[in-house]
Length: 129
Length: 131
Image (cartoon, rainbow over all chains, first blue to last red; front, top):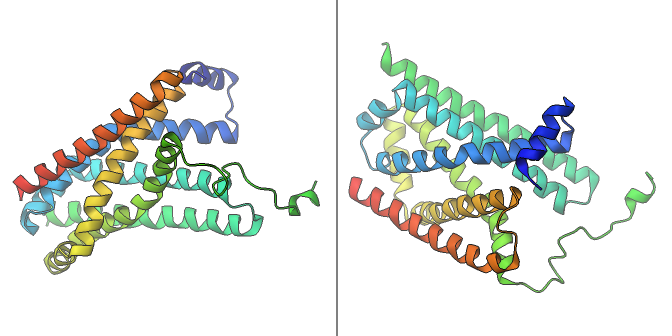
């Protein structure tokens, strides 16, 4: 199956089926995550041993703050979608499957919220105060 | 149809009766590392939350991160992350229709294993020398 042919087919038809959209967004997020992951790990591994002031100086930069948010946002989306496939694959019971799906979605939103608030505070408190 | 859904049929990966192979072990490791990485995802997001709280929370979380258990989890996660990235790229190559021939299965698996270990050591050295 060729991803380019498939994408063309999907966009030509003008509507995305639920499964196709899931498959495509999972691939798209993973492709974007390759450079983001490399850059995040390389910067984070160096920042981990640094002092509070050095870390604030680095992450208050709107570019790095936005980059970090984007990395976590896409990673959380990637995890959410991966977990959905795993739940579909291994959980045959309808009720517990639904509970797990909802837990997964709630986890995704809570973590996104924490990341957004934390990075906003770092940027807003240290740039203009 | 609604009545039939109550029958619990076995689902596709028959994990309990299927003989483990080199390729199947690598494949399931992709899933296990993917799920396991959520632990370090929570830890690292917690680190950023602490950074936003201020210097006291930051010092606390750095002490927590220096404990042996967390250090072990972080180093294991580093390998898991690179392994998941490398096998992920292998899956993307398969999705595009390349390297699907049987003679490519084992070489690509060895490339993935080698790269994941190499990247792990590279990032560990990078962290070691910068701190």
